Image 1 (tube, one colour):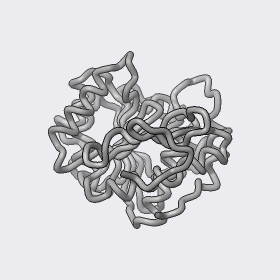
Image 2 (cartoon, helix red, strand yellow):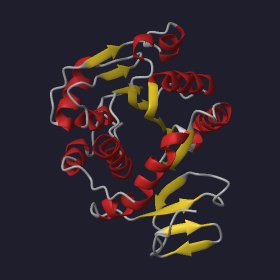
Image 3 (tube, helix red, strand yellow):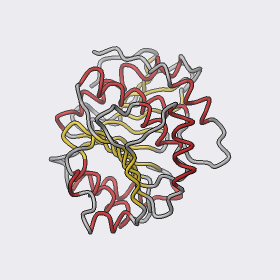
Image 4 (spheres, one colour):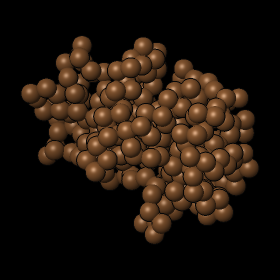
Length: 263
């Protein structure tokens, strides 16, 4: 088990991004999970690479990713309706950095995939956030593109997972996981986001969340519970949900006040 703490910048990010009138961005729970995973990649796993996002809105989620961007990594922002100056300003505001290595791609993400506009960067991303068109076809296309872009240690994040007003997203994610089960697995979901990795890295990322996110969020005055979604041989992923009474773990037919070994 690896102990991971939040980065020093996380509370600052949350303060700067809070109550943005422009909308978008990340809630505290998702921001803490992102920060944990991005830090774990760099600090413990030696995983590096570019960071990408489909569906940028005003750039508040991009700002958190940018706090972890290293000198040799690039940020790729894909959106049909890019607000470049506003996004750049918000990234600088929330990341505390002026990011020079931003690749602006103002285009429909489906055309980006079909025209292979990122071909030169396939297999070079460690983080890819999908928050584009909410149709089934659009989500499947974006996931196909993300899979081409991330390398074996990379993580794909999908927004609005289990959001009932965009139910086709969840359907697309599970179809995608079934189609490419030899290449990609879900290791965590929660607060309307799903997190995917290669089978090789699944345990590294799942355990990082499982053994650390409760303490990190309690340090931010947020109490959550982890849920194991099946017997140990059924599903590998965990869910991060709101705390039920004083229980930190929900297993099949059982609540636990303390974490137990996964399985």
